[in-house]
Image 1: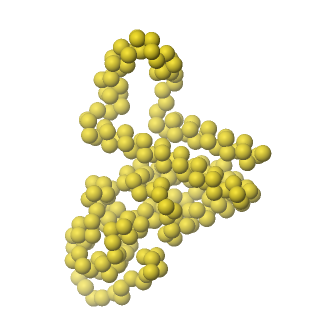
Image 2: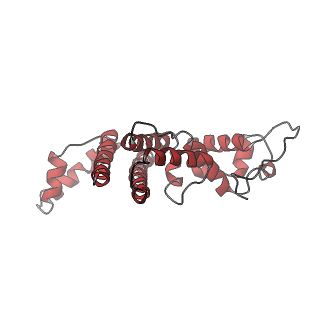
Image 3: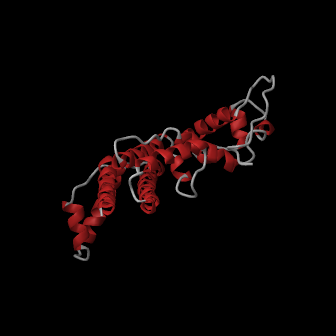
Length: 226
């Protein structure tokens, strides 16, 4: 029986009462602070001042715990708006915000569909907004938006992690490698790249995300209108 359907153990008079919700919230706090590598059933049990074996009555494996953590964050993603374009934009923005609040979330999305209740509610809201779109187009449309968002936020999180690992923010990194690029561009071998780097607009992360999302939504709208 999947964890979504498996009943929790009955309550017992113990000094530290447990529930799946308490376990998941403790795991999320650990992951928010120190990443997924900080999450194990033993560490979660310690955070709850409970014996590790007690947790197995609620969660059988660490993979189940990760599934529950993802679904808990999916509850924070509530797409809304008038019309499918606004709903898809809301989906993208809310997913990005969730990743910024829970960096580890970027590592757990993008594989097989999440089937927890909050994940299903999120998908229901999106598909309902696409009710007027051809049913054969709906899944590729949502998949395209999800793929864009996952790729974009993973790039942002990789940049964050690089800053922590190197101690250099984006501006410092550019100052360090700028002279190398100028010497390389001076060879004349990369004229198109040199033009873009020197003359193109340099957008921040928010502007880059929204511009790319607009390109995608414009393309979807053109296709759906046909």
